Image 1 (cartoon, one colour):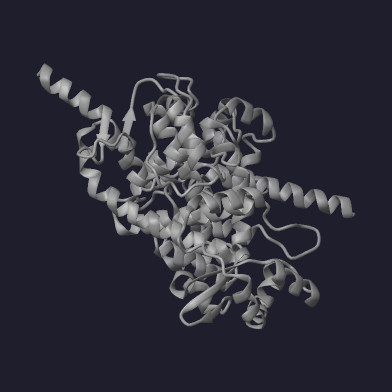
Image 2: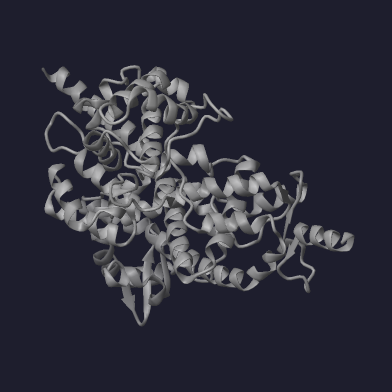
Amino acid sequence: MFRQSKKKLASRRNFDFNSSSGDVSNQVILSSTASTTEEEKKLYDEIYEGKVSFYELPPQGEITLHQFETWAIDRLKILLEIESCISRNKSLKEIESIIKPQFQKLLPFNTDNFEDRKKDYYSHYILRLCFCRSKELRDKFVRSEVLLFKIRYEMLTTVDKSKFVKSLNLPLLRYISDEEKAKFSKELYNTIAPSLQFQLNITDDQQKRQYLQQEKFIKLPFENVIDLVGSRQVFLKDGYAYLPQFQQLNLLTSEFSKNLMEDLIRTYQYLPRLNEDDRLVPILQHLSSGYTISDFKGDDYTSTENQNNDINNRSVNTDDIQRHFPLCAKNLMYGLKEHHHLRYNGRQQLSFFLKGIGLSCDEAMQFWTEAFAGRVSIDKFNKEYRYNFRHNYGLEGNRINYKPWDCRTILSKPRPARGEYHGCPYRDWNPDRLTSELKKMDLSQQQIVSVLDFCAKNEYTIACTKVFEASHSSNDSVSDSVDDMTHISHPNLYFERSRKWHEKREGKSEVIK
């Protein structure tokens, strides 16, 4: 038994993906203490010469299990947001505006800080282990990472971009001579002139010609930039495409995508070796199973209650408050009003939601007592229900301050049976009922069809996000469309964002008056 334990401990410490070669750089080592070596610093200075990376070399050194999980989760938050934006047909500029504020908080990259670089590098490789398991996961991971790379590259300075490109040593990055450029100057100008206008906002013909004189061109086989060939953004000659330097990002992303896909397939081949470790496998399975992170930051419910001091027993029943409720909370309130009662899962879901928006325990007791009136006597309520509601607020039992359910938790519960109102309407309602409800929210037929399409694909949180965006936008001069376009994965996040949007809109109306 002692020998088996010793063998398992040794297998946990080293995962040698190429043990026969004895190459230390191909080992991922986890230890109980994190350490920083001069070799590590030298490695990250080399691979982050331009502050972004192709992640060509495996990471070195030691990290803790806590770092292993939290770093992966932070990167996954950004990738999930990108995937949601792609599904909602956001443009690249819109995605940039959504993702950029999250970098500093979750995944700083445009810095010289060693720990930030280490976190970025390790988190990328950890998620490779999570998303190499199937073609669908690999495709999603590559698509999100490529877009993340594009956004980061565009945020770099010209100097950092140049450093990064030179550090790659790509054989395809061969610039044509001045003689060849002069030979095809007319064709090159006619090809890139429209791109200069739409991508760089250069409209004057003289300025375009001056730009052409300074611009360098890369000559490469046309299949490497096939997307630009299809849109006629490059000059073609004898099977070669002449790519202007300002469009070299297309080439870089093509190389990055190809290399990453090859590495993911290679990682999948070595994946069975991880089965020896009983600590990492559950974490990896948890992350790759569609782990979603709530954007709602209601960890301190005492402060939430103080901020939303207008939330009380009476106000939660008013239209002024309920207009901010997501569809799941509206459905629960309807069931409670209709039957003066909710079954256990419904009570829990609504109780935690109301707690999250700022309803105090005392006000909650009054709310539920009055809501059950006519069906449940005061004595029966105190005997059978009071303890449970106080327990939700951490005032009974183990006194745990429970968080409101996020969308993942709600979707993990059993589907509602007849007479039950918990769950997610985008999953549980049939298309006719959902269409009828969305029409009441003044969604257009095209918007409703889009929401139903996401429901059919089991993308319920994206469907909810689409409904929020459609119902919180306006073409009038008083109000703005939704400023915060991040993915909604929590009912309480829906409420908070809706409330802020209406406050901003009503505040502008008062100013105009």
